[in-house]
Image (cartoon, rainbow, N blue to C red; front, side):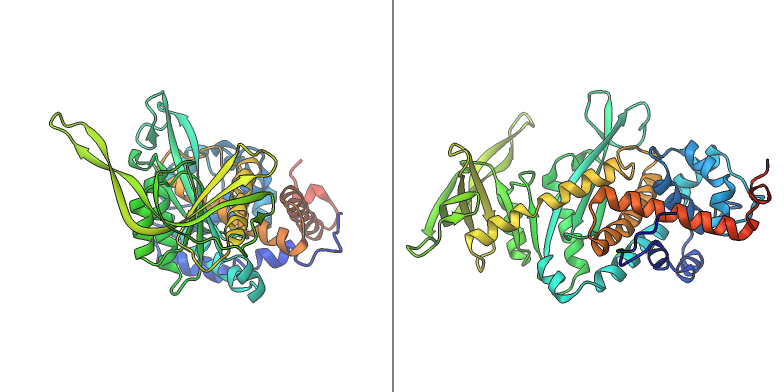
Length: 407
């Protein structure tokens, strides 16, 4: 069996973070087990966690096979005589109390985030916020999904990521959330509510450009850094550059650092009921930073922020860290099956996403503690789980596999 001696945290320690007492408490204090004979909340939790880890492509059929596998039942001490069908899993996902899984996710996140050192907390106070879409044919997502009018519907996952772990998530299936102008502010405000007296700075890409939303953020004391569209129309109030400011921003060169007012489009209904946009100046000061690429002088990067106490280099360096959430999305899509909709019901979609984030947190902590890459962490985590199973089988059958597997 593979033993990675340099690992500081192993799978036994991580699985121990999910105490049986927590699952039992939530089972009693939520509606998770109403009308359920076999797939109680705890069993579905274990099934989804194991299924996400062990299957390259998760589906209701693979979950059926996983539950009926004696290895799975032995690992989580379940009744060997119980079995389920795919249809039962589908129905259970559509009706089970998703709040059960949400509370487990929040509890696990709080445990791990509380374990960060003060240095890590200072380093990772940048909250990256972004969204990803998962699409299916309209014929499959009959009742759910953002309709693109092209034969497909999408589910939007909007996530806040603190640099180590996913710290908040929203699932959107209504068409009004097709644009980031509506979805991202909701995630940000949700995260702010969770952190009284927060000192976070929210980092966003070009999906959010509304000056009115930026004005609201400033009024709500929400610091942000947003990459703006180039040549964004504005009125310059004053320059924040001085002769002693270093214009070198690493791979960029500072062109402008100014206090500005921004223009925005105000929606107007005309007599025919159509909406057009009237240009309007939002008289709230923002900071505009314009930088030029050293490698490609024709390429400029425009940033809008309400953060005044950091240098232009600090601002651009902070924005570069936004890439962390892109890597995280790629990880959960490629390694944890999030690109596939296991359930086509919004409730089931929520359950699967919360479980995916729980598994992601376990692997990311394993990755962080053992200084590994994403793929290596997932592979070694799965290998340690396999070795744990082998050890349990050997102990249980005394070295005779026929005792355990019916042959």
